[in-house]
Image (cartoon, rainbow, N blue to C red; front, side, top):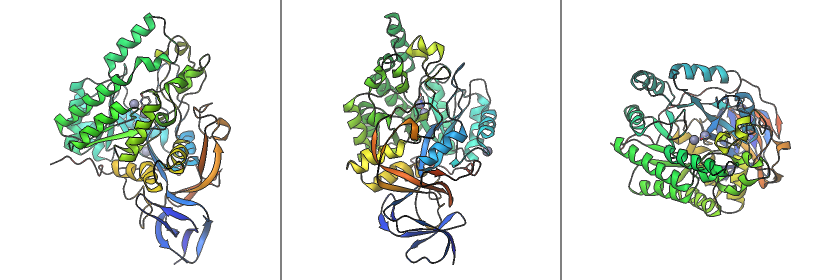
Amino acid sequence: MTFDTVIRGGTVATASDTFACDVGISDGRIAALGHDLGDAGQTIDATGRLVLPGGIDSHVHFSQPSGPGIVMADDFESGTRAAAFGGNTTVLPFCLQERGQSLRQAVRDYHAKADGNCYIDVSFHLIISDPTEQVLGQDLPALIKDGYTSFKVFMTYEDLALSDRQILEVMAVARETGALVMVHAENFDAIRFLTDRLEQAGHTAPHFHGASRPIAVEREATHRAIALAELIDVPVMIVHVSNRQAMEEIRRAQQRGLKVFGETCPQYLVLTEKDMEGLNMEGTKYVCSPPPRDVPSQVACWEGLQQGTFSVFSSDHCAFRYDTTGKLAPKGRTSFRWVPNGIPGVETRLPILFSEGVVKGRIDLNRFVALSATNHAKTYGLYPRKGTIAIGSDADIAIWDPAREVTISQDILHHGPDYTPYEGFRVTGWPMTTLVRGEVVVANGTLVGRKGAGQHLARDASLFASARD
Ligand code: DUC
Ligand code: ZN
Ligand code: ZN
Ligand code: ZN
């Protein structure tokens, strides 16, 4: 047998094992794992390198409407290109239903934005902002059946927040259909109250963003989201968890046997609230929600990753330029209230986790693979097609140089925004080559992939989302 491609001489790691072996690829899939695999159309030398399942970033935002005059800095082309450079082979962006818009129309709109523009594979989560009878009774169940098997709800934001009643209603649809509900857990009324108070006191600088949504705001909403999910008996994913108190709500629920999952992100491991105090308006570069907290919160998030309370590590890439289309939009200059929430991270997520986690001994390589790929595939219905190196799986592979020392800076990145919140951050270990379904997208740091080669993936139900009975 002649393979299309053989990756030779590397060390392969999955979520469970690490072993020296070559990888034979045919027709976009992994066809052999072994030695002396024989002829190949193309050989990739991976001597001294790690051969890992391509990263799956199950939480990114591209081309999402973000308010008047504000434009997201990444569309599907730049976002998936940057993701490929960051060692990713699949991303799960959000498809936002705007209030008053039909859910079906939202899905059509996002396909129009994505189709033909992606360098790597893509699959949408839905965001439900307007759970009308049509959505609850027809569109949402039908879309879940068509492979959009997860959706997010927000407990805060003017145009997004659902009431507890509405959350129960969409959770009931998930219960019926086997979908996974993702929750942005922050208390809307508390944020509005605190924001008004801060503004009345003249506290409008970017760093007051942190004071407007302190840990109790997140902890309370996390507790409430879990309680609502328990009432319906439906699994739930608490996304972008930033601190110990919210983490402990999740852990307690897990210990009670509830199907509650947690996600954390790079900003909660290496940034703090202090970063929002930069001179002039520099602090806006770090404004995201929930906000970065403090060092004890970072320690707690590591604990969550080590102990399994958090099963997925995502970027929450939500990029805005540091100019008048983004962080410095005219209204944003008047108060933190108007600064668009979100920071870039799709290209730096994995190097930060590898360097701070594996190289510094906080997690082992197999947990790194689980947190960066395998658990995302299992959680969101892509496993075992994606997220592992096994015979029959898609040949989605990232080849890493585990010793390469890199200082992260805007100059070396490929994303759309004009800054990185990780400027000057030093890491050891970098993804060099990325293959999607056997096709090389990035070769030793050079783009060779083709825009449009990325496909949309219909997903199965989450492996974790079947209800208890
Ligand atoms: N939630 C996200 O998931 N991303 C960006 C902003 C937000 O509030
Ligand atoms: Zn499509
Ligand atoms: Zn969110
Ligand atoms: Zn997000």
